[in-house]
Length: 173
Image 1: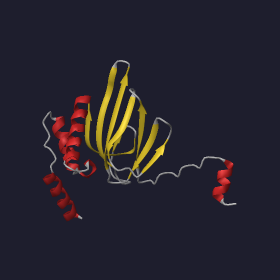
Image 2: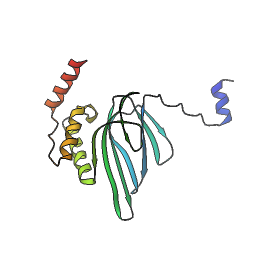
Image 3: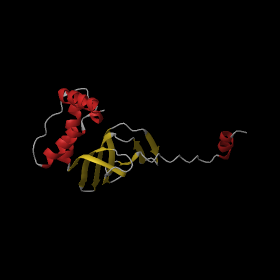
Image 4: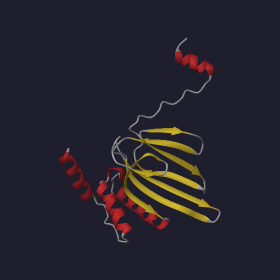
C-alpha cells in the first residue's frame, strides 16, 4: 500500500506545509456588513482557506498589492482603510499592518471612506488605461500618499509615466 493510500484510508486531514519564510501572508475576513477585508489588486502565489469566513493569501517578495479593511457596527461604518504595500525580503525594514505577516513597505496608507473611495477610483483609472496596478511605479503610490496627506490632488498615472518607469527599472538592472 502506498503512503498516499494509507493516508487516504485513515481519513485524516493532511496538514498543510508551512509557507516559505520569505512569503508575506495576509489574513482576509469576510463577515457580511460587519468585517470585510479584501485584496483590491496584487498577484498572490498561494492561498489557504481557514474556514468559510477567513482565508490567508501569500505574496512573493517585492510584490505590490492593495489591502482594503472595512468594519461596521449597528450604527454604521467604524473603520475604512486602504494600504498599498510592497512585500519585503527577510531582513529588510518593514512596517506592521494589521492582518499582514510579517509586515511590509507601506507605499500608500489612507483612512476614512472618502479617501479610500478616491484611491479606489485612481486604481480603476489605472486599470482603464490597460495597466495592472501591481506593476505601477512604487514612487507613484508614495506620491499619492504624500499628496493626499497634504490635502492636495495627486497626479494621474499615465501610460507615459509607466513607460518611463519600466525603462528606468530596465536600465537599473
